[in-house]
Image (cartoon, rainbow, N blue to C red):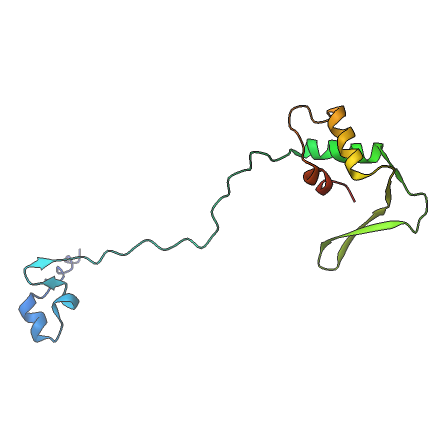
Length: 133
């Protein structure tokens, strides 16, 4: 069997490092104390997870609002009455126009009176934002 490799040479003492042109910091020696440069952990660039809102509506609740709008409105029979919504670059979602038979405030008060959403009250502005079209 081959002989074991020789051990690595010892690190040069501070005097030899000074002769070699290295400062105490570069040599790893500061006077009689040795030090280690501590590095801070890198800053994460990914966004942190957001806390979920307390007043967030579930998908089922949004579907109930949409169903309420379709039950209390009329879909236009004319094929030219269409609405479209942008869902992406050069992507549009097209649907038949929905005609409201009442004002938005009257629809909201009727929605609150029917208590479609059993526990959570829905503000007027949120009700308007959840309108299907």
